[in-house]
Amino acid sequence: MTTKRLQISILNSRPFHAILTAATLLLLPLTVFCGEPPQKILSLQESVSIALDNASSLKKASNLVRLEGADVLRSYGGFLPRLSVSAGYVPYSVSRSYTQNSTQETVKLKNEQETLNLTLTTSLNLFNGFRDYAALQAALKNEQGAGFSLFRARQAVVFDVTQSYYQVLLNEEILAIARENLLTAKDQLTLTERQFQIGLKSMPDLYQQQAETASSELAVNQADAQLERSRLELLRRLRIDPRTKLLLEPVSKETLSPEPLKTGIDSLIAQALLRRDDLKSKKLETDAAGWQIRQATASWYPKLDLNFNVSTSGVESLRQTYSGNSFNYAYPPLGEQLENSIGYSVSLNFSWALFDGFQTRYNVEQAKINQINQRLDYEDLHSDIALDLQQAVTDYSAAFTRIESAKAGLKAAKSAYESIKRKYDLGASGFIELSSARTALFSAMSTLSQATYNLALQKNVLDFTSGTLSTR
Picture 1 (cartoon, rainbow, N blue to C red):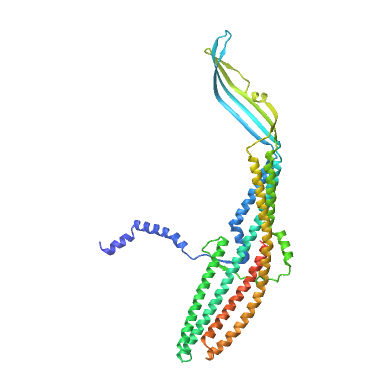
Picture 2 (picture 1 turned 120 degrees about the horizontal axis):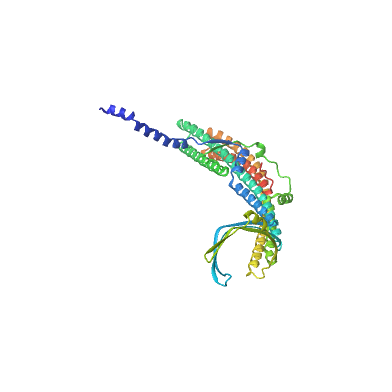
């Protein structure tokens, strides 16, 4: 058989087709995975909505609210009677003992029986030092506090995503400015090369322009890397596919140009102290810690319980054997026995722990220390809100001033560059002056972009600090 025929035979064989099919199926997932990453066009509102749905911090806060709700239900249950039911069935039991017969002779006695018993027990606490009431109040406070913590967590997610979103937009503008600077440098390099060829520019001028162009390319690469980092940070907050390529919609001019602050700092602080959900939560946690002290001191008081018990039992069969003789006793039906053998009992149980090895004293001190620490946290947060708000107001006001300065600087830098550029083209100005003017121009453009987004960022900080940030 020739080599060609052998190759055709192998290709047409069934094992070859099976191997080829298996290899295709194995490589298919890899091909799909290595495909193009998904693209997603998002607005700021859509980004916030996605983050609110996926944020693990919100899920944890929501779970805590559910847990505190279950604790409230448990505390309400402390006022209700305890109820338990028990049943016992003995299919066969044997007992042996000694007894005397009618002739005063001691004989062995063997009892074999089948029994059934039912018991219903309920207990109601009448007094335990108001432990149940204190536990209920503490649980209610903690549940309300967990709800406020959830609201604050939502604001934190909105704040964080908005900051990251603005940072991506800012880095996109900085990259665009860097690319424009590179394009200008390349155009200038082309012009310089032509001028050098006809003798209008010297070799050092050409080298300097080449170095300037290379520096501009480096700036583009750095800006592109910074943009990619900011996109990854936004993806981290959105909790979506890490390979997603984000395309962000620009925000409106109104969003980037907020109104100047008209409210005084004292009024802002007063409003923030009323609106901050984390401060409300911390206040409720402090109040709950106070009720936990009352709950711990309840162990110093006596405890009084009311108990009620219902029980019944019946014997299905009974056989006694002694002196070699067996006797079977006939009992009424088991259901009739259970109905006619019901017994009741009502009791009051009084208990008072006079000494427990200082355990109650320790629990009370622990609860007191916890309340003191909670109060310190509340006071620190109260003070931090005022300080943070003053800083936010200062930064917000400075952001307005920075924008005006950036606009004036850009206008001056643009005029200076155009003037020096004309002189340089005519040979009346050197490369150093042109390079400095171009650097100043694009630096002023970047400064204005940074100032614009910084104002929006500071407005976001101010809203978050004052507790007025919307989560919708």
